[in-house]
Length: 106
Picture 1 (cartoon, rainbow, N blue to C red):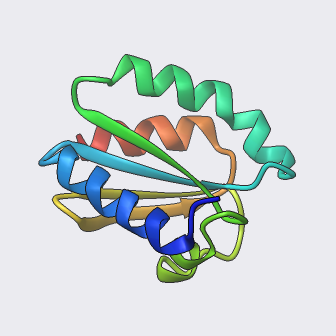
Picture 2: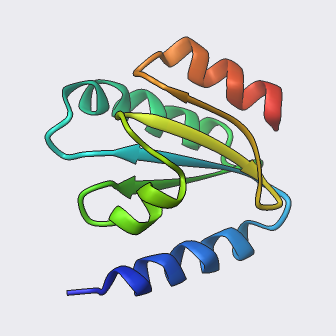
Picture 3: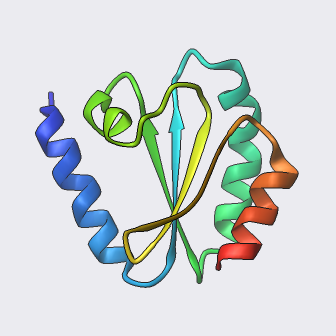
């Protein structure tokens, strides 16, 4: 088992590796119906915008510390970062809003 601290360290490493690309944190739970519904669309968008976008999936039950750091209270919640700065955040499995937010922030 990985400790929560190593999850935080992994997130930091992934953010550093992303550089100036748009980073999308997908806060989800395995038991969350809407999370399962939007997951295929998120995978499609991740592939479509692979040159400009890094998608990091954060399981709120396994990474409670990261979820708390971002004040996550519902799933799915999408947090958009660029150079570690938060640009946008919204909750809900809204595929058109997700794609619009990616396009607006790339």
